[in-house]
Image 1 (cartoon, rainbow, N blue to C red):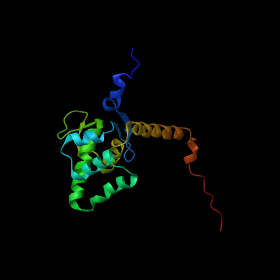
Image 2 (cartoon, rainbow, N blue to C red):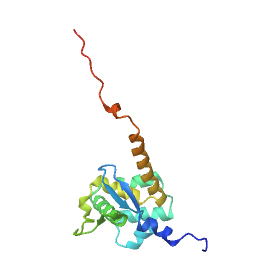
Image 3 (cartoon, rainbow, N blue to C red):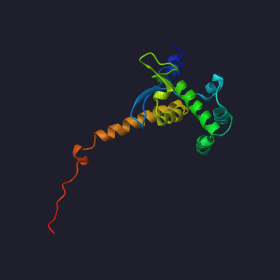
Length: 165
């Protein structure tokens, strides 16, 4: 034993990913984060996504700059590029189900099978660091646990008494 971290630990985030419940629909997916340099290697990415990738790799990515990325959709050309960007990132991020052009297998879907809000959540999570994706999943589990501790009758309406006039 060399004391080095096993290679399987390095690959775990890429190969196994994390199960995430998509907040908008409560559907579950297994996904991984997508490294910015990997997106550049994919080649055919829209200019709008290239700008985000380059800024993330070599500039200082702030929340404001990230939000501005989504404000470019005011023009039709940018909206089309954004659609392509979402598809590219979602396809790279999803492990299960897999996004393919012509779904045939039980674990294959088309990008069109995802709601737009699901695509946005996957996009945002995919570009997080791997530790951020894990924390997101852990926060979801904690939220569910806290709901389990709520008494059942807290959601029942109180009886309304109607007074005489």
